[in-house]
Image 1: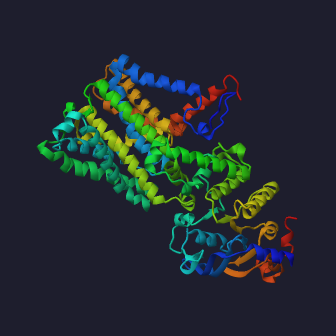
Image 2 (image 1 turned 90 degrees about the vertical axis):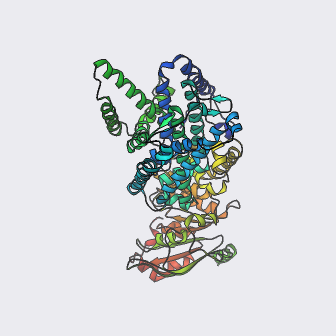
Image 3 (image 1 turned 45 degrees about the vertical axis):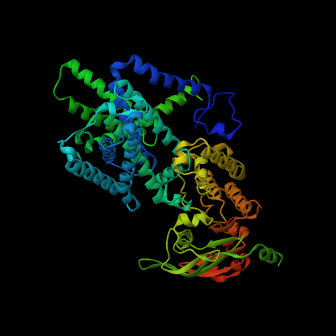
Length: 357
Length: 275
């Protein structure tokens, strides 16, 4: 429900369906772009690692949000698709690509897309049971995806490729898009921003077109959806594909930002954290993905600072889990719609402020 | 007699035919050899006491249930094996007895969803949005605003979330969603249940509109308990009692049939419940 300021009238349907309907909102978007593309990389360089982490979590949670929040398919195994994206991007980079492709910087973008497609197809494979099962049973099959992919395939076979014991590494001068070599932190940050904006835009566009509406229909009422002509199974698998695709991009981005990946990055815990992010941010909301990741990254950062100040050193890792678990409990009890709903409420409040209605 | 002629003029070819349908749930026989013919352009009502199997019949036509025996023909084609979404493609749409809207979506999005089959943009053009999808969405919006929202008089609620709306309006939105499919046959499963008198009159008017207006000309199958409305609107009435067909005929004949009256617990003054 969008309130328009007094005196603003739409005359065309395209105006009414636009994302940013008033100049005020467009101005805010420009400010956001200036902040994220200029202010952060130039002035906030001390916090770049946190922002990179934020992008990583937001992109990972976006895939989960698409499945749980929009399509209603509960998943607890999304880290598996991150792992598939990361590992396939690393392995594909080691293929003997022709030299000129390395020189013009075409290898990495190609690898990025191919590994995202592989992750998407892998996700579809584990989405196939969704044709038959729903809810808790689907959670089990996605958990199977987690354990089969990461703990079995990748730990036992894929990570042994090339005689390396556990970790795969990637030389950072290979990560090159056109003339742009992504090796410094600022580059990685900007690369992440671009990836996040593109995948956000893709999901937002899908949600306001035919495909996304079909997903939401499946979430809300699949019988009525089918009566309206939606091929339920087909659209569920589409959702798994897009979600896995974004997961693959996320994993590849994670790999590129670290230059080293290991099985430990993609354990079951990570899947749970991704679900936790959307619970805190708000299920079924694109804003919620960013809010949830902001909450998580900066909560943990603040906790680290506090614990450092107190002088506790050893057990910070458990503090992290405890704080996050408590936060999820608190949100489920007091704000089940998440931070995105709070945001929406306060925006509406200030729309009419200082009048009550 | 005049009414009879009018009826003959209106009804054309057979659009939907149920032939000897048997449906069992375990050992419970829900439908026992039902046959029914729905002609193009008519309002064909299905009445019967609670538990008679009316909704089961609608679910069979729609494809949610598959009968154990018997055939369903739509435009002469046997559609027993088709899934509901394939039947929607043929032009078969429905509303539900208990409202089955998409609660989290706005009214506009619900009706847009009914437009699903008329939109062609796939997942790639949808993710880019600008260009093909945008044109298509605007075209769909124009259709919804000018044809459906205008017809059903729901302009004021188009951006409200559906689960916040009162029951009567939800029923209306559901009809709008079914119409957005531009169906040839629409199944209206108790569209008047739980509405107040004014809303009943509105809804009856909409049903007549979509049946008679040149723009729509939708054939309706109407399941309803409100005898006053049923007898006024229908061209033919099909009476069902515990899985058995009692009769299928013009409203006047149905009213005269003693079996029908008995099926309704012998309520003599049944048809005067409303007026």
